[in-house]
Length: 128
Ligand SMILES: [Fe+2]
Image (tube, rainbow, N blue to C red; front, side):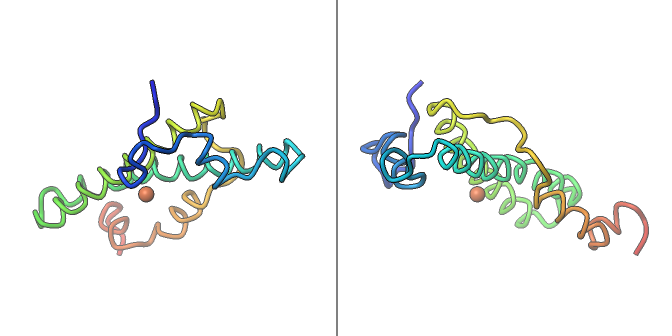
């Protein structure tokens, strides 16, 4: 399946063209490891975009419908993040790159650790 890119590209730019702009490979970087590192970085972005959909959904469930305007806005935000994840996933798959869970620790996990005392998690656990 062909990768569809954001409207601003009007499908006039392909995965290879984007790769040249985002990840400089070929003659400019003769070492394959440079390209691999960039692809790992792009996969980390993909993972973060995908994960945000899950986290924002959890927040919506915590809100339990109140206030409706916030639930609506978060729902739209999830839609945006899902599109970002889809673009990166399509790009990486088309390039033959890995789309598994990125290696090492992620800033998402660090954020979750640091936010355990947030008002939302305090409400969830009953500890304020
Ligand atoms: Fe995003």
